[in-house]
Image (cartoon, rainbow, N blue to C red; front, side, top):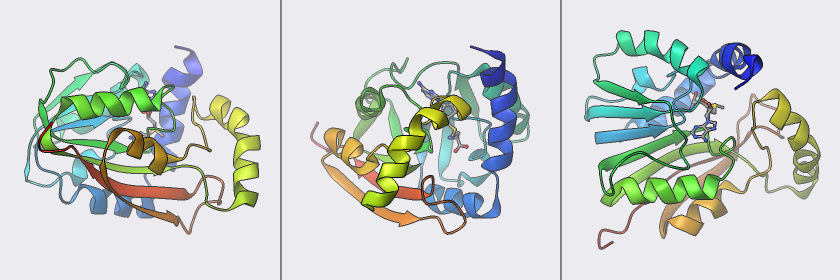
Length: 207
Ligand SMILES: C[S@@+](CC[C@H](N)C(=O)[O-])C[C@H]1O[C@@H](n2cnc3c(N)ncnc32)[C@H](O)[C@@H]1O
């Protein structure tokens, strides 16, 4: 992992992802999470202060040790018991049906094989377990899609592998049958990076 990814990008991310509006989305998404929870792509830990009391333990995963270094100071102040792993969401080091809920915020854009990560999330969820997500991705406007396709190669370099043009609803629906998703533009972001998909997908109780 290069110096930019390890030292500079985590600090840029911390600044850009901690705005008031991003914090409001985090709080809203996390308000119903409960039990033994896994968060994929924990980054600098910006979700941590917003987990409700219904969360009994939190396991987090991110392959970037620079992110983990910043996250550790947040973990030290948290009342929640947190276990961190330096690993990829594409290959989760956990047993099948281990977690009650899985959380993923603005991370599927950066995982090289997002579909594999989603299949892994499905595998480690208990039957009836829920996958909570908020992601940016492919707009529903063809004109914006064109810009997103053009800009993605640049974005991948500046934002450490992030794609602007992934159809997040379709990706989640390839793995989960029961998916509720809302799509909207975040009003304070440029349209190319501010088309959000927020939702919850449920693992079939009979799997
Ligand atoms: C835009 S950041 C979002 C961080 C955090 N989820 C948040 O909401 O602030 C994307 C995160 O995905 C992580 N990531 C990149 N590749 C990954 C992978 N293969 N598996 C899991 N996380 C990954 C990055 O290290 C980074 O922390």
